[in-house]
Length: 136
Image (cartoon, one colour):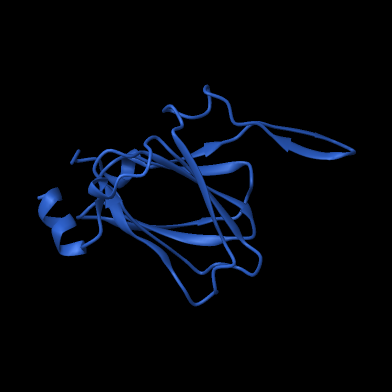
């Protein structure tokens, strides 16, 4: 697992076009620092639930609050930081090796994830103690 830190995580602004008809956000290859291999989204998540609770060995991700808001806890094994996402034209880039937990989902929120890999269970580190061993 790469030894990325939370400093390698960054907010990405997604270009938008706005006129009297509303806003249009555009995600193209110049915005995403990887080739997108998978797209998935979370919705109808109860406000007292959390998602995530893992890190990836290979996958890079961008997480976007398409609707509503939620909080992402990012952790590199030595530092932790909470980031609130609540704008559909802003995403959080997560490189490999970053533990993430998503919580405090507002009513009606939709969490979109752009991923650099297809699903592969072996890419996930789902145990926090194992994650800390990988990072040491």
